[in-house]
Length: 459
Image (tube, rainbow, N blue to C red):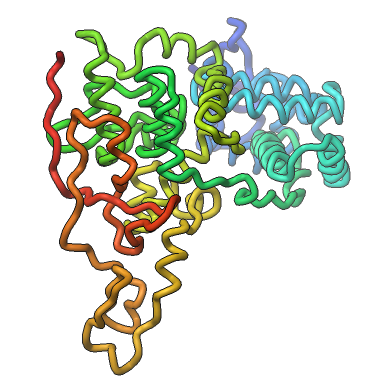
């Protein structure tokens, strides 16, 4: 793509620009090894211009270390934007355009909100070099004046730092003006609501059809993201024999986690079986194509509007809509699982990290509070023997007072033919830290190791 040549004035690099014109980058009197090194980076810059992809990390680092004279030569050759003339609007548009192939449409839409704010505040023709840390702080104040939530302001400042960090790597600015501009995120627990199993069953009873019943069950009893993971689910991903489900995850695919595997939880299984019986022969996806087609637009699943119908179902069930309707169903599932299994296992199943789970998903359940009323730590006298315990929590030593010991018995999962009315007394998982509920909202859990049910046959 580029070659090195020498004449009476020193070494030069010859290449064909993206517009088809032959160009020359004169390096002056440098040694051949230096010229060859520059040629490698010129080829990387040229490939980035042609493909629209980000510059390789090694070349981006090199650009940040070279002198201004060489930068100007690269800018004149059209390989980089000139630091003196780079404008905010054109730079941000180019940044967004070069990430079309590597980031989901929903991600680029969210970035677009920050780009719009930056252009509205600074102006599209503002030079990148003219944006100072003081002006960046003024931008934070501007966002606060827009009435945005604290978490939204925090995220948009993160994106602004990312945009300008890239401009710094490209040599367009000397420093990142947003490097130390931060905003405290809001408390996510303020919008978290625990949706009990009993209330979920009431929602399912009032759902209009088998597909809505399954959608609610996948969110609350399987912890799937709605709509992306539910509408990406294929029948080939459902392993009836082993009681496992492979969940494709569009959200985490770009991070090297295209899927995860979850157990076929007892409260989820009957709704999958019901959907299997209602599926036409030869169907690839669990949900009918008409649902998937209506849910996916040009910007991906982000255009899917499930809220209106779901709110009608909630009110029909005699409940009031809660914040973040689908997210809180998934969060309630994770809160229940966290009472029974190690958090590392739970986050593997639900596709997040322990830190994210603790901040955004997991809360103590009512059952945990009830058990705590009868719990006490082990004493030194009791350290070498197991004390009788009526709470269902057993401990072996003072240092292991919080360890849960598996119970020896577990309820049988409901048979395939059971309908919704048979689930009111059923539990979701077999959890030793939870007692069998004596009143509403206490979740007891099934043993995931039991093998009940069989591979359904089409009717």
